[in-house]
Length: 304
Image (cartoon, rainbow, N blue to C red; front, side):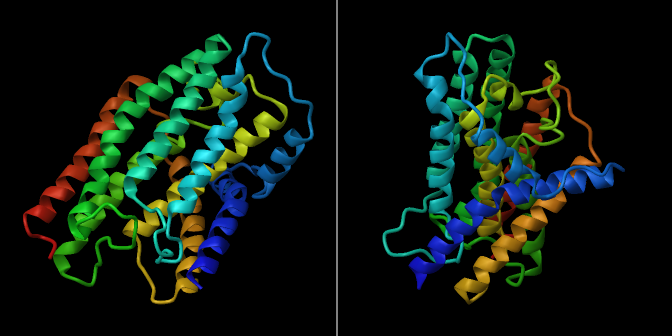
């Protein structure tokens, strides 16, 4: 049964990733007074690009062609490691460090693809992505430090803080959740860190590395972008969210939580504007500081 739940969860999250991205875009547009796209538009965009002719820049190398496949493979592997049903089969790999390495691999190849064409915008986006990554990783370590402290190991499992343990656990849990949310907004490339809806050369980061793609390579990159959103949302809820006794109920809960995350991200993006690039280190320092504070409170005995 564990195998069945895990594979059904993997297939469901993978298939629904463009829908969850569409929910966030639609909610943001409606709250800004615009009609916006339908929640299923990303499916049509991916389908249309998949059936277009694929061309590549004249001076690009094999790294440019391989980058979308590497990004998709890294994110799908990350999805496989997450125990969506709350439990995993015997000897199933689900270490938190795997998530760090796979995120770093995806970020490295995205930057490499942006540099490979020798284009101005691609190089600008690659530089910004890699610079941002140097602040995301320590902030993510700080946000997850409390989970490692409570569980005593680095395996992904719903071992995070339970609000039913003590009244004092609410504050550290809230700090850890806030820290992780700030980090994930940066990793997703959403406001206030980046705006996926703009192609202004002075502001774009993640979108800059996709400008030279078209056809199937662009479709694969777009699906990887939506998959990253759903996978990291599922990861956050698994380690910090509630857990139910039934594996199928856990799986349904995770899908609902990802949808709630999409609605929440759309609402947040309608309330905030993009930060200036030179303010982003301060933003990530705040995220890391909140995570460190939560860890300090746990070590100090406020969570038992």
